Length: 210
Image 1: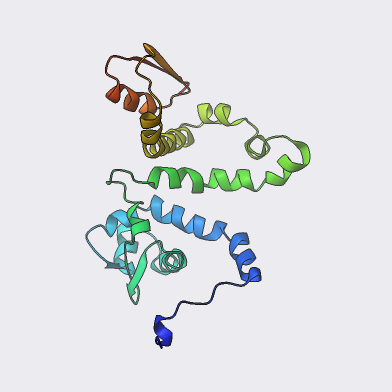
Image 2: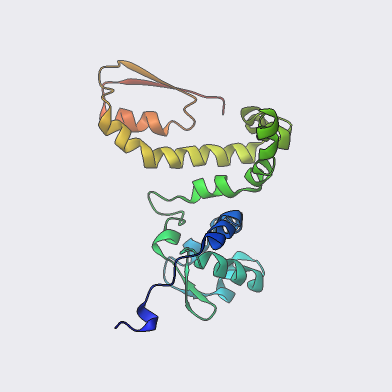
């Protein structure tokens, strides 16, 4: 018989599953904070005590420790010894210096703007209007035009997402006979640039309101 330490933990009950879903914004906020602070970058060379991470990030050691413990419970970082954390395969994706990093996307999804918008989701359900306008007084692209920092975060996330999902699209669809290809709302142009790298004879046009 396997020892009790090697046995899997029991599956959460239905009640526990609902509580985990209802509290889902809590680990999401923790992942956002550590992405913002570049904690995964600080751990690139190996585990470090949270006191060192806090000093490098100029934040409260106790508060950062609680956040790290929270998201370590869902596999983002690992407490390898008391108050000492290392990267996991999930937290490695938060490193800013690696190809395929998800950091820019996480920063967009978890930023305070999104929390404000989703707090108004009931408004959308009740009225059919947009939660974004209820939260900010503007529709999304008007808001991004007027707020440079959020606009940069949005475009960086779109570039990150495109870099991850576009390769299968390019393999599945032949753009080679298009002659001239225009990407309307193309952001930083990552989609078009990846297509042009495969189809050198194409002419590309990116149109966006940056």
